[in-house]
Amino acid sequence: MTDDTSGDGPATRYSRVLLKISGEALMGDQGYGLHPPTVARIAREVQSVHELGVEICMVIGGGNIFRGLQGSAQGMERTTADYMGMLATVMNALAMQAALEALGIHTRVISAIRMDEVAEPYIRRRAVRHLEKKRVCIFAAGTGNPYFTTDTAATLRANEMSCEAIFKGTKVDGVYDKDPKAHADAKRFDRISYDDVLAQHLGVMDASAIALARDNDLPIIVFSLDEPGGFRGILAGKGTFTIVE
Ligand code: UDP
Picture 1 (cartoon, rainbow, N blue to C red):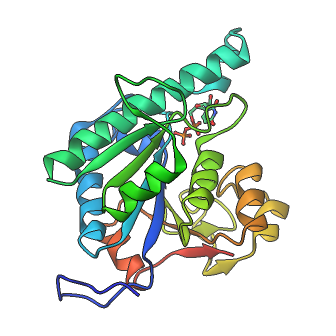
Picture 2 (picture 1 turned 90 degrees about the horizontal axis):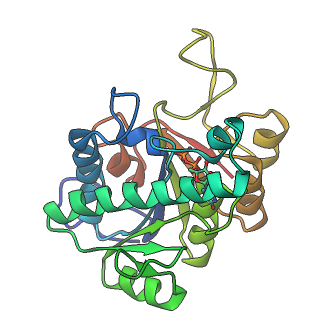
């Protein structure tokens, strides 16, 4: 149990979490790339949780810049395209680092692909130490391997860092039985099992990420990142979300 030091809300039962967001979450309404006010807004959401004393890992996708599948559909070799996708995640991680540091939060970008001038290499014990010192660790370059996604990277790092849960920030406030933006009668689940997510192809995360979370009893909490204060509220047990467990 971590105390809420600000005194304006209940305590949170989480001490270490991983926030996964897609690259598209950083592009605002632009349709491509980085939208600095949106990056700054998400950084403030992270700051509000950091203030609770929670240790925070982050994984950011790269889909706002480049996805491997997009490159291979255009005739590029898949592995090359995937490496480009991984490099895109490094750009997003650096943008988030800059936004968090502008708020006075200490951070480290930790890359699965070595690029020592830009980011630290991934060394598990060193990353754990950063977390203990309340530095936000932004894990970049996915798993470092082609044919994976940043959802799988998020699940891998959350396990390695002994996070209590993955918080998957999306555009909707949980997991629905069908797309809530297209169907008015879509039903949101409060709780759903990993196996039901897989069997119903609910698209919370890709199948390998869900299976890795299931096999290690790592809960996935799906919530809306568009809701101001939503991340902090959910850590305090309030708000609307779906828990996959
Ligand atoms: N990628 C990869 N290995 C990884 C993680 C990511 O090859 O471990 C590549 C892959 O091409 C992917 C791209 O990086 O399409 C961007 O990641 P992702 O699609 O997960 O980003 P998001 O959809 O979350 O923005």
